[in-house]
Image (cartoon, rainbow over all chains, first blue to last red; front, side, top):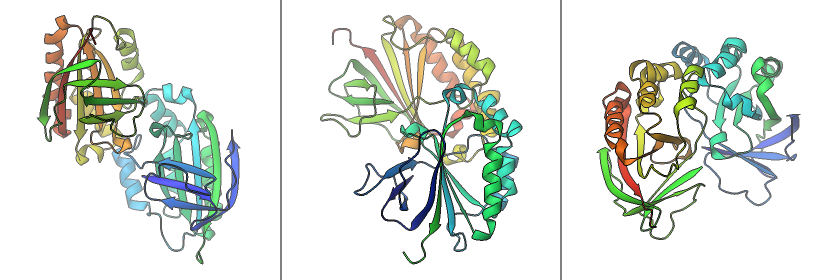
Length: 182
Length: 182
């Protein structure tokens, strides 16, 4: 369980907070990543986003093997750039059945295949928020070294032009840099 | 979001509390079904179980159509019998990929097909608990009229002998009757 807190303190300095689709989030100068579910906003918090790393919903065994072989864990010292991208999908998405969601997610949008292309450069951790009653359905946390910035932009754009993204009704893109001196 | 509270009060009288697999739950005389997430156990509560009705994880469009056509909502006046069956699945289950879980769940265990056979007699509502950090992964609530008791026992036994159930590491079976006088 993870809580992301935007406010005046935290290891991560926020460079940009962009409302890509729908309602924005307040701009905060710093963010903290807490490895538990924080019940309520601490003093000075400007936003608080919670999520749970859960079992995979769409990945097949073959895809899992490719992912496991290539994906790094967050926390590599050289990966000082990060992005926190909370998204919410439409009711129409959630009313689809499992097979229909998988069809759009991978067969037509190649979400997994696209992500694989940017491994091991970009570390990624997905958090589920919808069942917690949070404002977003998912929070994805990415970490990468500065020399992979262009690759990371490519990855983000590839997903945003996909059919899956037509179901995204809210998306905020928060870019951060690890503050080595903090 | 739902909270089931076992204690001294509530609309439902508890007839039996059986530990089918693993650790039992304390026996309580009555239970209440609250349509929100109760943060902490109220005075006199002997157990408290929380869950969220969420999107379906395995059902295909064809199966959904069959289910929607036949399944009643809980709350029918004649359905005065109920069962609350919390289960927890093993780590081995959760480490399976989506396609492997679906294969065991339906192709080999016929979970959906079995449930369909007992519609519209048995109303059913599934609650997800795992991502809330609860002791169980799922809570299933069933309601049926007394004349469908034998059918309901058949349904429960069919699932318990299935391959899917080999992954169940904890199961409690709570049987209740709606207290019309309460």
